[in-house]
Image (cartoon, rainbow, N blue to C red):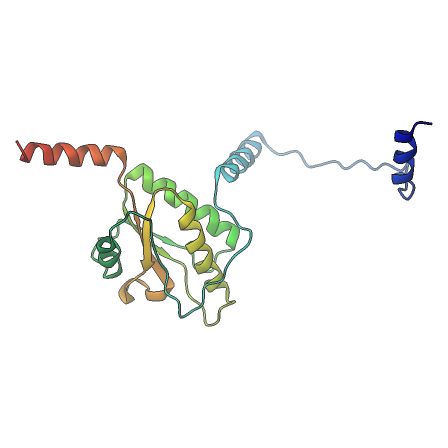
Length: 189
């Protein structure tokens, strides 16, 4: 026996073989539509870059507040005052974390597709730091930072949900930038 075989035998000494009993499990077959729907859901979940792992829970008295480096402070100030009209709203109240994750990502994709720039996300606040609403609030803050097109977000005005909601500003699409450039180029001639 070679040294390698001897080492392998030593490592495997406390391993017990699997039993010879084998059981067969029959799964209920699903319809082609159900299989297609399940596959689409699986692929959609794979494409979602939002993470669910480690979470820093945000204290209840700490307002949500973020701006991408390079974004002017004035943009965040106007956002805080509710000066940008909200183009779409997402309600995450009382939804499980996994569902909120997917809903937020789908909402983000819709915003890009429809060229919405200012969004309102209602996440709830809760009465204590470990409440479900505050967990969702903390995840929303984490997830928004993971999305490339998010320029800034902050706590909403009282009439839009206050600490239980946040405003989000997305970057302009390439098409919107081109349109803006053409509009301003005509005036400068």
